[in-house]
View 1 (tube, rainbow, N blue to C red):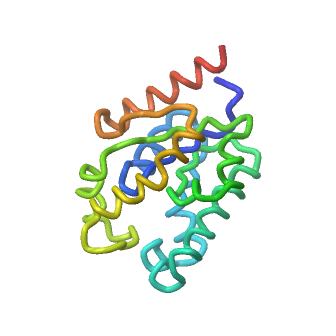
View 2 (cartoon, rainbow, N blue to C red):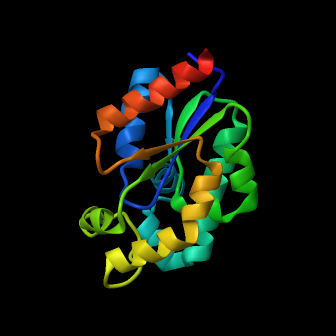
Length: 175
């Protein structure tokens, strides 16, 4: 379908990376490598539990290891990456490498906060998820934009439509 060996989905917590990733992996017949699922399989703990036990920095290190090891494996795969990976230069470089279509799924912090509060696997970062997510967007927006080859409004489209858009981009790149 294209020269891309990986589709890497990025965005803030709650944006729907896993849901879109599952749909995309199913349609492409590619394996899914989801950061949260891989961390839980590897450690027996959710991202929330890891943050509480080890701290945010150690959690982010594990999230970066997931991305880098998955992209080094040769593919193909749909990768649902943790938002924190864009904070590291080596991860940003890997996301910009040939063969990687990096997709930024965007949504407002207010929209994401509604999802964020009801999901027990997500780490807690304070009493108001909307404030936390707005602060994260402020820090990471330029980094997401610097690595994204495709940006999609996740609040305005269904997971199926978002997968359609990614597949159309892959076909367009294939010529």
